[in-house]
Amino acid sequence: MYFSFGEILVLFLFGAVCLHFLASIRVKELALHAVSRASRREDFQLLDQAVHLRRISLSRDHSGRWRIWRQSHSSKSSGLLISSTGSLTLPMS
Image (cartoon, rainbow, N blue to C red; front, side, top):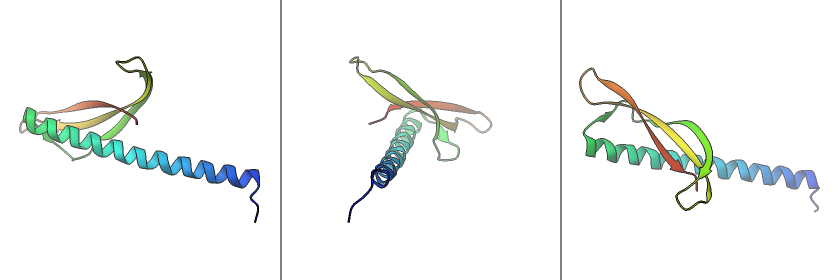
């Protein structure tokens, strides 16, 4: 059985999409854990236990290498009526 170039390309693209999806889920879990730790340390409460992707950017890290960064957004509250938003930037690995 032989595969055509188009079939191989489709399989490769499908695999790349699956890997991107799994990496996105992992980064979202890392962001949620980081925000949860910060909420315990800084004494605020996450309002909906969710972290939302706000932006993806390409820039250099502290060692000068190009990295893809994901900026996540969350809602938090530190009192009964006070609510605000917070952001967290993590590198995409």
